[in-house]
Image (tube, rainbow, N blue to C red; front, side, top):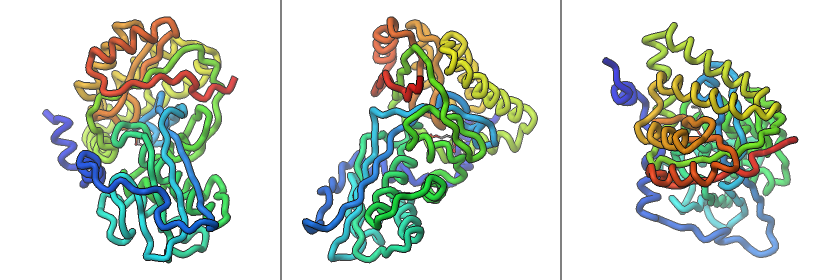
Length: 349
Ligand code: PMV
């Protein structure tokens, strides 16, 4: 029998574990805007985390996905000029850009791409990146980092990027970080509204949902690159069966659009549960995810599922305001490493 471990082994190397090791070692905490001379401009950029409600993985194959912003967690970048070779400052690496380790390849790609886009120069450019979005938890940390960086560097050059240019630049970094990326994260980490995303197009959704989303972290690192590769390999071996699963995940996302607009929380919860079953069939769930999902449902959530690529990372549960405390408590007891409540999930109505 084919296990997810067998499939994961065939995946290309992941850049992020190096980043996690650096995080664990606590190396090189950067001084913000080091070397900046007073009076000279600083470009700023920010982006937030996102929660995929429906359509992770199936979106890679051209189906719809629904994502909501998560303002609790952010990435912030600054760009400024220094009298020294190009530098990058972050909690994980601080030093000359050209010596940045492999795990910094995606931010570096974002910097190089935006400099080219705005017709600027890398000479004497310093960029810093800080933020609270945990890495490898399905919350869009890499897209948010790239988005914050490209905005900061473009603004230093007096340019406000057009939406499609910004999207293309973030996608350059996403391809370095994850391989094939649908582009969902590139939009969802910028837009302050819930969105429906399909084949490169994002539309703002009406959200009348009178319920709370609770995001809980398994504490387990989940590699997006490996998860996407795993689904691709599975699909290569069991094409018809996996295509049916992928299509149903897309159909659930489409139905969820009207649930959100119509405040149909029970239906939305049931669809989340079905999506979780299907994602487990794609082998991207994990025992820690199953444990948290089970705990949330037992404590009265309408529905719960993994969010993002899976293989670890976070779950998202939907609960009535009255059961938020019970669900949160149950998630804590089931071992959640961190829990966030999204009271404002980009409501547009
Ligand atoms: O795990 P995240 O936050 O990178 O989300 C990945 C979403 C996928 O659908 C699995 C991949 C993609 O490119 O859309």
